[in-house]
Length: 114
Length: 111
Image (tube, rainbow over all chains, first blue to last red; front, top):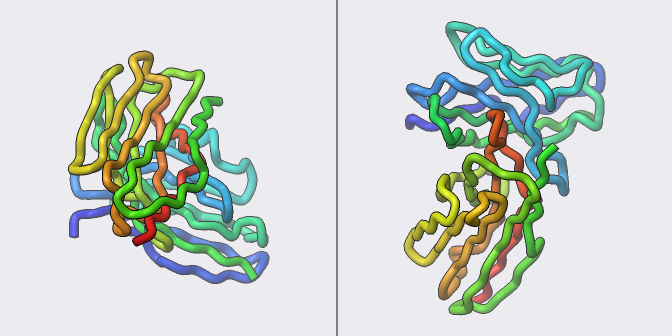
């Protein structure tokens, strides 16, 4: 399966704990994007990364959220001290370097904060 | 911030009927993508349109990109129950890399 992989698929955390979401892009893709889908809302952009660089984090909350895409290994979206409002589906997408930015999505991680 | 308005929000039709979903914006996009999303899954890419006025066909689905690259439509001919799902349009910013999503259209095709 050469698609975008995300794990875990479901994650339950208590308020104040940390959540780590992982994304492995499609083979040959060097661009990774994270989106969040809140209940009853559409997909919202969070951050765009290339290997070892954050290119655009304009959609990321300023506090508690961070993202990385190291030289080796998957991209990680990290949420510290989670609150109930962080409960959502988090999707990762990847693309090759093209002019029109065709993005392919993973199955998502459903985060539930108790 | 670019916005993409998608309509209708809900659509319930009988098998065999035709339907059209619209996405409109006041902003120009470098490309526009249509996705379909099943419950509990990620969006699956159906098509990407790039050139103003472009029309692409995928079996019973016809996608069109407006001449000014600000709007798009998805037309389904002779809808089937298997077409039931959430359809999303997403525009790629002209000078950026992120996708701006419409709110989605929930389609239900009754047999």
